[in-house]
Length: 89
Image (cartoon, rainbow, N blue to C red; front, side, top):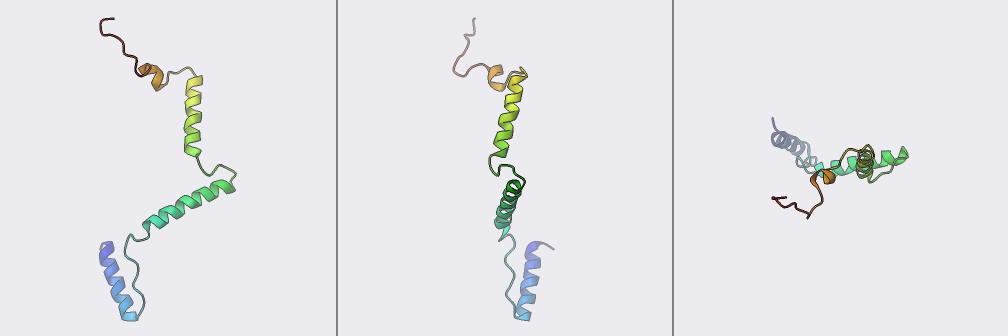
């Protein structure tokens, strides 16, 4: 049984009992995603971590460590943009 069939059965039961029908399937999905994101930010603040920009800061830190270790980054491997070498040279 899929979500629509279950919703139809639940709606029928609600009408028989004189209750309000349940919301349509998927109606509150984005609300749940939004609440989960807010909860994650709240937990970060309570734990003393920054609530925003954590991924970007982690990437910046990782790139800094790679540059310090002497491994060439992507821009160093490819050369500077806009500077092409002649094919005969």
